[in-house]
View (cartoon, rainbow, N blue to C red):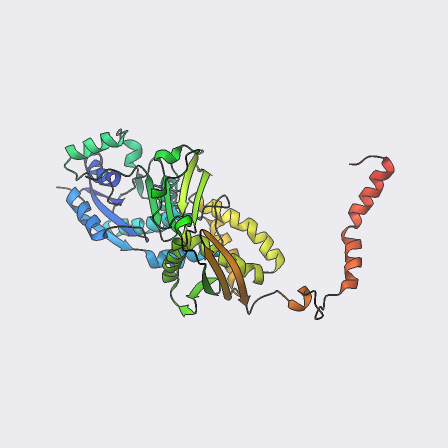
Length: 406
Ligand code: ARG
């Protein structure tokens, strides 16, 4: 008997991807290899998830710990780019998808698999991110998106299908929310959040406490950076991965890092999204403060534009694009001297930069001070302003002569 074709599936252990296993077997007559990516999400043990995949019928299940690569190859660049989509969202899910895709492609090669499958819906960004990434990494692989193809329209229909096919269905009441989380934060959508007028219920958050319930005393934290990458907290050196965990903890217990926004998806839909990204947002605040001190003005100003482009590129699933790579090179060139320290103060939902220092600081006390040490040449200011405003004065004089104001 000829061997069956194989499909590598991005598996989470939830209802959707469990149904995917059986559905792929039935509809594509394939053997399914499940891949579970550990990217710092909350879970009750990934070994259990693996067992569930195998019990549901996968011929193999790989649990891949991607956290170090995620921190060192993805979240370093995300921090260098201070990346915030639409000036707010630190790209939590958008950052993990290309990394998971890379692993799916590697495992597909290992097994000689013809297909890669994912459990994303046809309405979101994640399908685009998985598929563009996989296509760029290996265009010969065919992608299957079961959730987009099957006609199970409600959760109940899906549950019934699962029961008929002997899949363990969740016994606890399903969360009304759709959640995706990793080291960089947690995304919460659906349910009552779909009405943008509804205040997010308190129970959607797990990484952050309610700011009102946060400690009544401020908490200070000092972060050291080496070439743009955090390397120590309060003088204690640790790997970036551990720093991210620690900052999630510190910022989270002080109620910092919640976002509630209306976001423009790539597929043309506006959606209401709630996030909690305590560590990511605190690190970005600190990193920006160090850049303010160390980057030359033009570099800093243009970087702000490139940061927006970087965020849009990554949000839209183009992690592996040449334009994104070119932007990475720009970002990297700005980080070479970014070594120094930033002091943050957390207090009941706020995170404020209260100090920054660096050997690469371009802040010059003698130029800045209003005290006796002042070395700024006040006389050259007049000539500078005369020339700086010359063309405007010429224009204004002409318009005055014409008797018009524009
Ligand atoms: N809207 C966010 C994004 O596109 C989060 C998506 C998270 N996915 C989910 N299943 N909740 O990056």
